Image 1 (cartoon, one colour):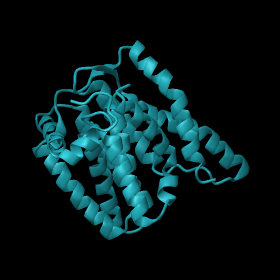
Image 2 (image 1 turned 60 degrees about the vertical axis):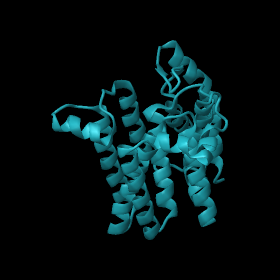
Image 3 (image 1 turned 90 degrees about the vertical axis):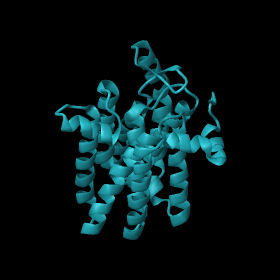
Amino acid sequence: MRALPLILSTAAALALAGPLLAFLRENGHLRANYRGAMLACPLGLLIPAAALVALIPLALLNGLFDSNTLAIAGMYFVLPVAALGLADDAYAGPSRGWRGHGAAAMKGSFSTGGLKAVGTLGLALAWSALTQDDAARFLLAAAVLVLATNFFNLLDLRPGRSVKAFVLLGAGLTLGSLDTAPLLDLGIWIGPILVAGALDLRERGMLGDTGSNVIGAVAGIWLVLTLDVWGLAIATAVLVLFTLYGELRSINTMVERAPGLRHLDSFGRTHSA
């Protein structure tokens, strides 16, 4: 049953969400959001936690009954990216963005953001080397993974924004390709992302870098699983443009100045600025 990873991981996320939020609040893991509200963070920890819990029955079914339900697409990329995001949530310094991390590195300073950037690149190259069958796809897939992971981090400045972008991207890829296989292959991640995204949208907690990086990593893998080499080249170019814009200008300002984007961005949010 191809949908079993999606079903089990969603159930795990729903079961874990309340205890995780309570744990974060009780232990003082709070962060001020864009309007100053103190929210439990990182809520994004729910995504890898639920995926790992769902992995237990999936692995048992696969090993005992050869049921072919063990869908772990991207496990070796997404989990380490989540760990890098968690380290950045816990120990981030003052530097922000690629320019800030680069400047810190040039001064000989260590930053978890710099570690995250270098680590994500290494992980993307390793995952791409294991999964892609020619040089062009190897390079383009690695670029898409790195850029998508960073882009969704840049997006995550308002509740629900990153998960809305993820849903729109996934819907576009699925409808455009008329292929549900990548969606089902990534179901072990998609279910928890939707649960965490709904909580983020309602300001029950903040995804943090842990969550936004995982969402970006899964989005990048979805692109790689769906697109041919020319599609990956176009995706790389678009992500480069968005990344440069986000580094030099404000994506947040762009969204809030465009009436259609502003309405979509605020839709479903508990509070609107």
